[in-house]
Image 1 (cartoon, rainbow, N blue to C red):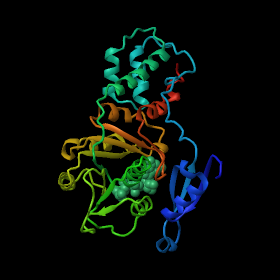
Image 2: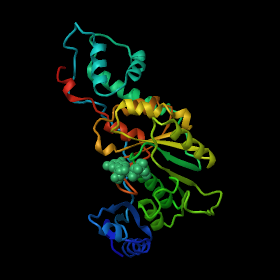
Image 3: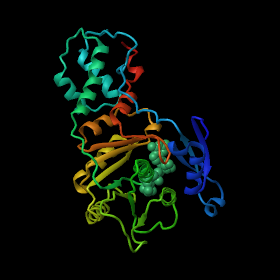
Image 4: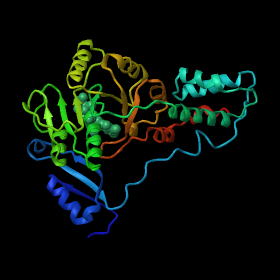
Length: 336
Ligand SMILES: Nc1nc2c(ncn2[C@@H]2O[C@H](COP(=O)(O)OP(=O)(O)OP(=O)(O)O)[C@@H](O)[C@H]2O)c(=O)[nH]1
Ligand SMILES: [Mg+2]
């Protein structure tokens, strides 16, 4: 057996993947990531999709820890301009860094300010305020019927693949149901991925019979919905009711602007949403705005997605991930 720490290889079928993993790592194989290799030209329609797999025999690296060094650590900031109240200056910096006014108000309510405060100390307090507020959230455990809902192209299907892989690596066998009215038919990434992992995929409107064990977890991939379209919202809700979906996860791209995020969060009641997931965290440095939705959005944070791997690049450890990404715009501090 190969003692190499990790291996990256290409494969087209479940059998091929399992065989390669066994040959290299025996029973200790752990899959770290699976990417679909993108083809160009017409051959992409003719050939079976190919995947690139990275696996290891070692332990999967632990999830990120809470950072010890809060927001800024470089120097001591003393209020240079006593004519502008210190509190107002900090508020301006935090707002410009993407934090919301309600979050600010809550922080300032409990923060005693004096005009000779140390800027670094207040930023550290703000950082701890974020952490404490998160720890006080009443985060619901996901149930047995989980649907990912969100606008078109946010990453619902990709995130679902990550969740499926997680279940499968934990030894579970969920059933996957595609709720798109059967309009897309055929073998897409989700179909091929389920096939590779030996998971049953039922496509609404195409597959007529479905057999499953009542104890099995069900994961639903809903088509993208237009959050400005009442009919689309109502029909999505009716479909989820029909399938007794208890965990309704709002999936949103972290790059969206706050107006659009607000619009989506305003549909919590209409869609009976319970959880939220943000995607594309790898493509944004502006994640401070997410704190408002995570802490005040009334949905339980489920996980964050930060890349295109079908099995990796996501974390259920929302707090440490976000704290590590939380930054104050350096430019704004140049004055201090
Ligand atoms: N970089 C990056 N790309 C992502 C992430 N999540 C999804 N993507 C990419 O975004 C694109 C859309 O992803 P899908 O999973 O198909 O999105 P969807 O929401 O299912 O789209 P519809 O079914 O058309 O509504 C794909 O190219 C994904 O690889 C992420 O966290 N980071
Ligand atoms: Mg999709």
